[in-house]
Image (cartoon, rainbow, N blue to C red; front, top):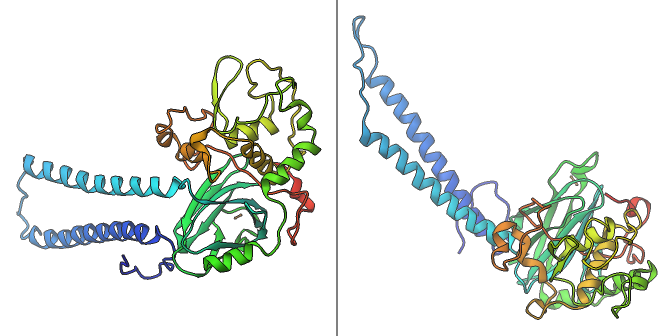
Length: 372
Ligand code: CUA
């Protein structure tokens, strides 16, 4: 369905762009209609009820139930159409499909870093296949950024210490601008890049053109090199919980609270390790705050997720889509949202690419290891 586009709107290059534009056009049309109506009535009444002579006195108005009901009910019905339409589009935009390709995005003053599940890494340039659903898991090394691709009609805040999500399905090959749309410092205006939408075969060729290990494999190396494996053993004799099959399941904490082991929980367990302690264990794990970059945290999460998930959540690794739209989405699983999170865009956490084994020209130097 190709609606006529309003002037000055960007190209429509994703499955949702026509829907977003339709809603936007509807809002503009309503606004224009009522602006004109009010203007015309003001002018008309000004003429019709003008004071005709010096001793002209206005008649008192007693009110009209009919009129008042009308101007209450009609705007109410109109605003409800905006609400229902907007809400359904919002849920569609912020509930990534489960069968999507996953890409990790890390914002950093002032660049965008991407890592594909296959291991490819890029900066300010994102290659994606045409006609495939792509889910972005976003976080930042430093300040708040916002990731936006106008041609896809997507935008997501990128918040320190938190994972947000966006998804799209590109419908036209080509190059589309991506922007940071949150003021983030001196070079905010230069924090741009391109999304390159490729034919699936060309994308496959591009994917196989080298790259580093997958995030999960890099996470496993980290898991060993950081010594995590000495406590988180695969048998039950370790000083920390066994991590196999934990991802995506409820975990019982000390004090009886059940917490969903999602990306956010795992991130917190790494950087603020004693915030939640699994029942039956001691709060002895050191914090890794400052020792692992956000990209490395993402890799560790990817590794832990690869250790197994509940049967209904296997496949594609997109296990955490349920909780991502905030409270509303959690009703589908019956799982309580993490009460510490208020971000409607996504209460789950990110996985990341490895900062220590960066290849292909990705810059892993300088403040790459800075923590939020
Ligand atoms: Cu990053 Cu503005």
